[in-house]
Image 1 (tube, rainbow, N blue to C red):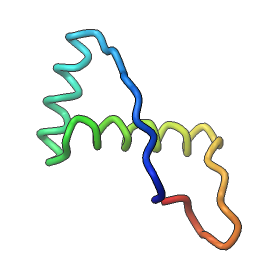
Image 2 (cartoon, one colour):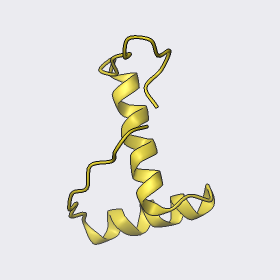
Image 3 (cartoon, helix red, strand yellow):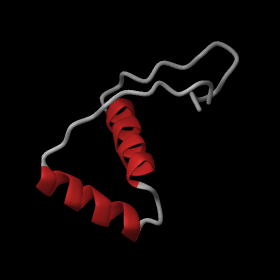
Length: 58
């Protein structure tokens, strides 16, 4: 994966606590968990486009 875009994300406190627990259960940071969930949702929605010469975006 290339450069990562940084941005501020505001979450409801309860939602953050749930994601925090979930990420700990899966041995990920909260940031990595959010990225994983978003990537999975984008792929399931059919919006993940493959780059030329790559089998899957990394």
